[in-house]
Length: 406
Picture 1 (cartoon, one colour):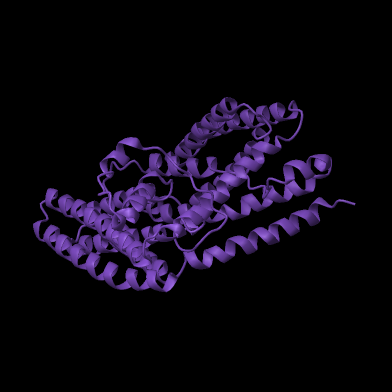
Picture 2 (cartoon, rainbow, N blue to C red):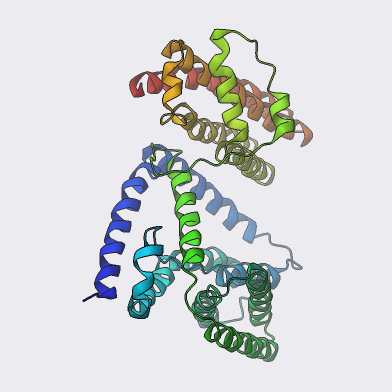
């Protein structure tokens, strides 16, 4: 006799074991130290900024948008796998308890995002609205939890609809309503927030009626959505450890390939060409590199002290270099590369050379940003410190790490 509740417990146990194994690598000592420093500095200057916050700062709009986005982002983790498309369809009428458990699990694992955003915006709220009691903000957070649960259930209902256009329109309308509700709540217009809530409830009931008219569960869509989220997790974990389950994504990016395609046709440059193309065309590295540059630039721009700008510049150079080290193992499952008549030392040197070049580019961008801000001494320190860090880090730590992993 098939027990969907027992089946969920088995699937959940396997999923928990799989993710916890990689989380140990993600939150290792290097990242933990960098995150602690980043959060501490950000909290210090956030508190300092609150003391000088402008009177016309759009607090209600900022909190409304962030709360609305948090409520709207409510994906359903079904933990389904490809073989389920064959073996579980026959037991679809017995899967009610399984999917109920997945909804509960999905809601619980997303609570951290609610608590994180609520804790981050709490000081802003109490600073701008000192006359209000703290219980009102807690009430807003409770409403956020209720709306998040409603969005999660609505998302589950809409996953029974195969047409992606209908699902996109539904999530767009619900996102707008979520933002409007929390904007009016924070702004103090409770009657408007109540009216928008009624509209959300009407849309919620409409989604239920739409889902009831569907013939059944769209198994392939559920499996596709869950695989996309697991692949996103694997891509993150792949920056810290080898992930055999990762499916590589390749993008053309022809104009970028042409920019780096000027590699001499010599044996010693074999891996220079391979790793350049991998960095450009893979779906993992270029995006991560650009995001880290942008985040680092924003922090450098907004944090006041010059010395802290330099420290954050070096910190993001370290984070980028550490993340890009995964390039060395990107082709570990391709047996043809082992047939190259090229020494392993040349392969290691090619990765170190590429990482050094990427770090120098990032250093120059941060230095140019500081020069543009008229922080001349900060720009010079970033330029000198970045070049020195790049040389020592790549010729020291990275080289030894690659030798040990070979």
